[in-house]
Length: 191
Image (cartoon, rainbow, N blue to C red; front, side, top):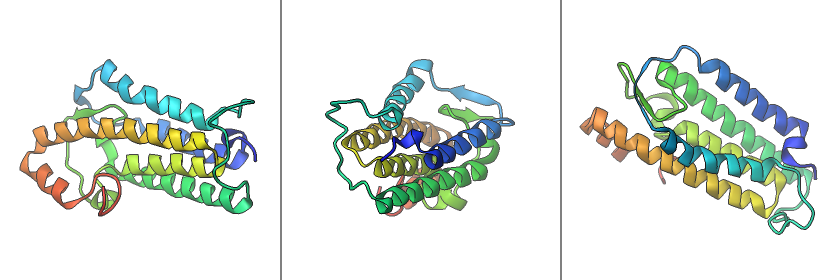
């Protein structure tokens, strides 16, 4: 089985997502509060390591590169489908969030509490979609390092999510606490 990012279909999905993300980053509202560089690094560095685990070529004698899923077309296309669904979900969330979006934990001028669209299903649908993208890539790769990469991505995004939640409670108070009580963070009805 080909390395995940050497595979043209998987690579195309992630590149298309990345290009959309870059283009959509224009025209957001001005920020009134932004997380520190150290805070940002505390979730970006683990995410980058997780991505490298999934996307680097398989080195010889890699103890995390043993297969845990069969190298079949069913496994591969299941992974690709999960990637596509996850990245599409994150794009839907990004579109729905509109000018309130930022890649950094931030508060925007006239920040709005968005509770509709994908935000009615989970409070952090962009992270849900990204995690699904990582899971799909890990499935397509089918190796132990995919499990580690997904776990690292989850921890990094959970850390970022917790900071965002604190800021949302400070900004929206009881309205955000009600939202938090009604809608799961990442997995509908569960987590």
